[in-house]
Structure formats: structure tokens, C-alpha cells
Image 1 (spheres, rainbow, N blue to C red):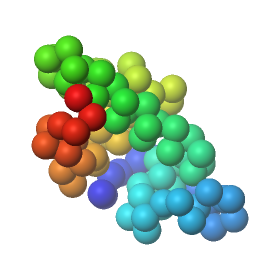
Image 2 (image 1 turned 90 degrees about the vertical axis):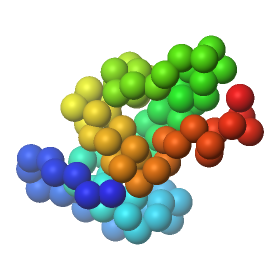
Image 3 (image 1 turned 180 degrees about the vertical axis):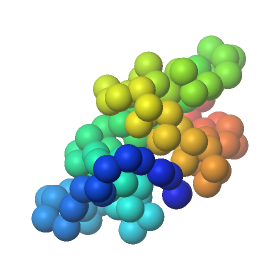
Length: 98
């Protein structure tokens, strides 16, 4: 889940929700300067939109991810790319929710 982002990574060690994230997700959220709550919210929204579009028989694209998240579109785009690269957006993982 490697992404590049300008600026210093955010220190999430004292974030109360850091225990809810996988170590790779902590690095991702830190790099994108997203507090854990905002990262988790964005992840849930992105996955919910993926399910919604699958139910309608529509493809899930980067722009759909950007619209679903309440964060900067560039950060949403990086989340989409990271999730897609590690296979988290594979249709098979969402079949049981459709």
C-alpha cells in the first residue's frame, strides 16, 4: 500500500483509533495525512459506493471513489489506487454484499 504524498507524514501514534488499522494502513493514512477516523470513514464510504454501483451493474471508477469520500480528491484517488493495487476492490470480495 505504498503511496507518495507531499509533506511530512502525520504522526498517528497517539490517535485513539490507531489500533483499528493494519500496520500497512497506518503507513497509508500517515502518508496521506489522514487521522484514523477520517481514513476509516473514507474507506467505509469507498467500499459502500463500490457495493452500490455493483448492485446497479455499473463499474466502479476512480471518479466514483473521489465523489464518495469527503476528503481531497487527490487523496481519495491515492486511496483508490492503493486499494486497487492490493486487490481490495476485486469484485469477488463484494459479491456477498450485492
